[in-house]
Image (tube, rainbow, N blue to C red; front, side, top):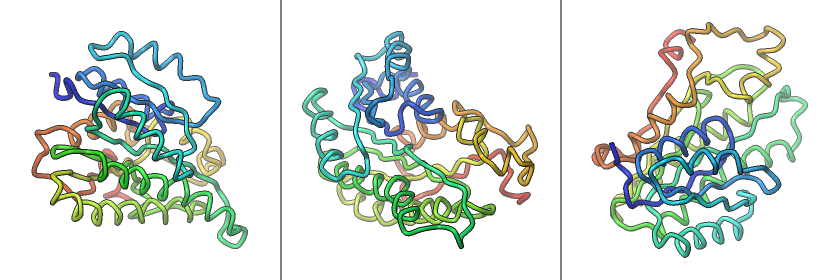
Length: 246
């Protein structure tokens, strides 16, 4: 199935678990990938993996997604290099673990800058640069609905991202651009394993409730594809049913 043949897809947080899986899935379905992640990271392993897919060579454009000018430059370069921009997947995210009483304004600003404002800037550029048929998928989190201790800024930012998705979908509709969100539950990534809540045993997760990055990538690809043409402004929970038990 080549749902993205001839299309360009830009993925932020591309070198992480979910971001990398999304890149591989979209490339396997024909997309030309533009990988965006922090400067200084090694993109060669993912670029090599994508080289085997039936797609044009991928580009790695390192950028600080909290920098408005950098985001505009990355999107402009993506169009200049590939001639188009059809899909944006906002995966980049960051967590810290602190009690509310210890959180500083710098903590709040940093988490919102990465988890919400960065996505907002890519949505802005997408609405400017995409044509009808364009699709944006924001990776939020079930923390937007129900959460756990010590992650208040992350949960609040992801809730904001779900709300932003709805607002952006309203404005995107007249342009023919769809905007949706995926809300993953527990996913087998480094972020999950680095959680002090998991390490301490304060939070336990049934192994049956832990998904894979590839399962999240499948949901992303569906929402980005033309077969989801009547879906916009939605938040798709992908958590193996865990949310029903929290």
